[in-house]
Amino acid sequence: MTHSIVHIGLHKTGTTSLQFFLKHHRETLRECGMAFYEGIHRDSNHVELHAYAMRLERTSTFRAKSKFVMDDAYRNAVEKHVIAFMDANRDRIKIFSAEGLSLLFHHDEVERLRSLIGGPIEIIVFLRDKKSYLASHANQFDHTGLYDRSDRHSFAYTGEDSWLIDYERRLAAFRAVLGKNNVHVLDYDQAVERDGNVIPAFMNAIGLGEVFQKEDWESIRKNVTARK
Image (spheres, rainbow, N blue to C red):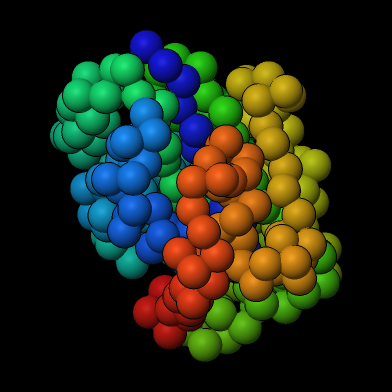
């Protein structure tokens, strides 16, 4: 079985544009020996992965809005769906993408993710300037007004001391469980300044930088803040 590539965001780093691109180029990816997973709830944003792996007492935008009960029945359904995808693509490199995975913080959460996907896993994560990242995150929550932002442990806490901008701590569990050499950090700000979005940087990271041309990705800019 080949390895899996798991893109974990972060939030507010061009993830939706990348997922849109991967979805619409599934066939080209297959021709290159790769398979982009089709999610249960959302085709290209694989929210069930973090919902499955995250501790029951924790939450996220998806968990809070969906109201799904994260019980054995839900987890069994996720396992069945992922296993079917893995079995159908044994000889291909598997690609998953879900910014919610960046909220996994504890070793046991990453262990559950590893057990679910199986095999060697490489993590790809885009990091951006902390100040602009936090401001963008705060703007989204200001727009929705749905979440309690006073809890410092919350995914919605955007104070200056927010854990969301402690990138080293956020990646620590991934490095500990999957190996530090399997966690690849890409610079969001450099990618956007150079290319206008993160798609070329991601494609280079997975070895497909020469497969797609500029016209394939330069017009893609999916900003759905109002929907999230």
